[in-house]
Image (cartoon, rainbow, N blue to C red; front, side, top):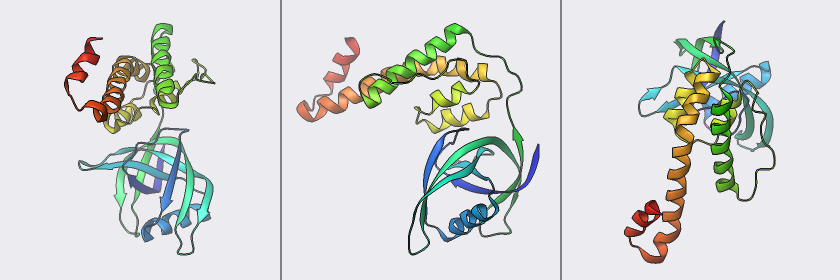
Length: 213
């Protein structure tokens, strides 16, 4: 479905559908953009911007809540991801970027196998415990159609996140996560261990000792 003139907010993040994102709005062009979006109760597009340029696939967002307004017009807002889109044509007539976009979803409803879902959720639980400590209080439903996007929120790798955002199959996203998350968990565990022990001894050989254990 084509949509004309979607305001664009290029950022160093990849937003997933239904994910929350806090934003601090301080540049004049984005104060104007957010003001227009709030006035029209409209969506805007969050799209990854990096040293490689701006991605052509992003996620629309809506403003859930204005957290704080500042006297100089800055504001803190909480936004939520909605729909994925592909940029068709950039429009630079306003102070902020706009684009004609094509909104898209998955091309099939096929779910990943039980084995894949269990592998993904097992790795996710380990990452959540490592990040927050203790036990995970609430497990997501393993049959929800957007499970991959929920799970992938724990992954900071922007290139990996952008790749997932572009995939048009939940099964493909889950299989990709099943291959990525266990190794990512082990790398994170090793990195955190090295950070803990390095100030105490300064010997790089301990990293090797950890890998052998």
